[in-house]
Length: 481
Image (tube, rainbow, N blue to C red):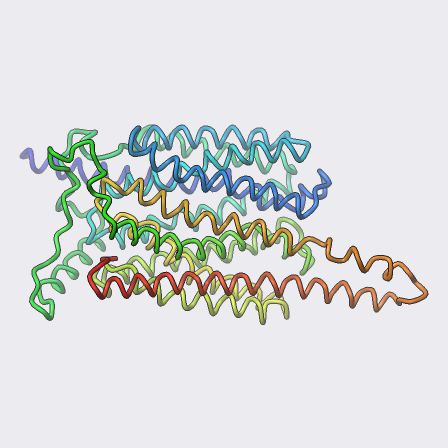
């Protein structure tokens, strides 16, 4: 076999290892993230924590996660994705072991903060790695399939936590989550490398990984060659920097790039507001509003992620095949569907469990497609693959502010403290019948939920507005996403 043939075989083998290890890494991290959300109601009962306190713990995690995104972006540029990712996964495993034995609010608060910093190493590192091992014309499709890591990971992590929560309580949920994430750490240790040069291979060129990828690449190139205005195909800049730019990426950060990154970050703010509301509060809402057991609530909440699994694959293939590696327009169309799903959740969800479940599935399908396109393939496409770790960190960090805001607002809105002023009247049996008491409580709950669903609708509208701006910039040549 010739040297070129051996390189091609090695490249295919390593790309499969890269996709597998990074998929396992991010899916594995979810086990050490979702156990807390699945256990919220049990934590509240066993440790006597209020809804507001749970919201504060979640907020501490998300603030740390947001800060960690920006820190990871810088560390990844200097130390490399591999070191950052291995360190973060190990730290998250340790935090979940502590959660298993935590018995008070302050321990949970402190180590959830540490866990947020650890979990923040995940997305910039895996996206930066993928950016170095893929080409733009295949990236949407490959990352569509690869992006199922946080749908399937989320589903499996929630179901896994719910199962062990029912069998062995809080300790079982957190310790078994740590076990699964440890397996992911081993996969990264043995199979992940930052770029082809680390294993003696040239930059990625013409080595298709999957048959579907090869077909999509051929389709895209035919479309480009027959462009209606006769332009030649757009060729992505080489991942290998010129000698003059070696070690200095500052020259790649133009004002146009910074503006585009900021707009995608604002769009992602709204997306993560909605996503983390569903992840953080759905199991608890299913328990308190529909009377489900903790494990059943955890299982049903996975409809959101299961539908998202299909949405990510759909968005990735469509963006490559029908939209010629453009990410903004298919993301925009799906975000319209996400907005309609939030509207459905607010108007029809309170009527029955069936409508609530349907709305979760609709939001999941329409949300995760744009989520993956904009924070994954889109983050790499915005600039040079050399900037992928930094851009992914900035976009995800900006978006994570949305998850912080929702945790603060929703925790307060869903807390029962607003009934305090009514309690003297409720307890006055001479003035109020039991039926009147029940009606007051139900009305107050409905009012709080209505305010929460209004916030979801507003977050969806914000994402659409930011993406409309990106589409306008695309049209005027100031963006190419």
